[in-house]
Image (cartoon, rainbow, N blue to C red):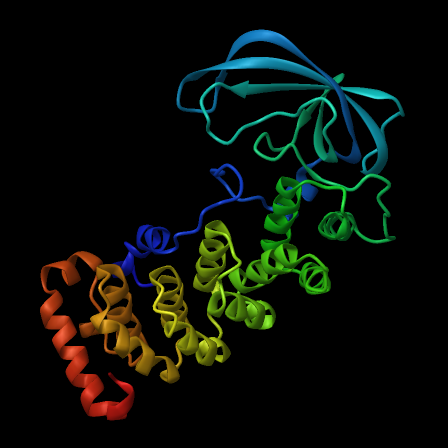
Length: 341
């Protein structure tokens, strides 16, 4: 992305009005890194947790008030590492400030990513001490990463897991760029639960996979039975699309006249890089939202490679009328007249 568009990161966050289904995390989970760095990866259950009192934690920015815990873990299956059976002691610290570091609770079942520290075990990544796993999990004969992927797929299909666990599994799979992760998500599209199908479809769309776009489009065109949260999540997932083949569906979604949807659509149209996106982008030059108008301008500028008419956001704010006038005139001269209205 050109340096003059450095404001796109904050702008993208503002445009994608996704309401998360769990607490916002500071850093996204990286399964490749997590499975590589962990000394021990095991499926098991936290049997008990002991609060050892107040302490401090220094993450490089000075000491933070925190609490020290010791937990005991029963390991049912080991994916990586070599440890004796029985209870294992986990030592961890949780800051009082909500910065994305959290611990585990008694009865929690999942895949634990651990590092050895003398006689104790610590979480490899304090932000992601574990990921959900089904009880009586079936481990395929595969690499550790593929085994973790398969377990997360079993979470999606299990009727016994919570909604929070299912969302955690979807989030991890959605960020994993492997063929098995994609195949696992595609398989979950056949789940009999409509909400699960919608969540899987939006996860695919958010990772620029149009396999889920038909389901997302149909739901957004007929949203009467959807919750506000689901509509926002489906609409926000559109901003992950970069595939030119999505343009026809994106054009149809503009007819919903729903600003939540339009914000995702305008991002995807710009990212498509397709000349077919110019007509719908031209229509959005008159949108009531300033950021949508800006993204329409930038999209048209990038697709036609007119850098001089592709401003940074602050420049657009200062001279919006100039840029809008130019691109409206350009659309009138270069696009079919009956499709620029």
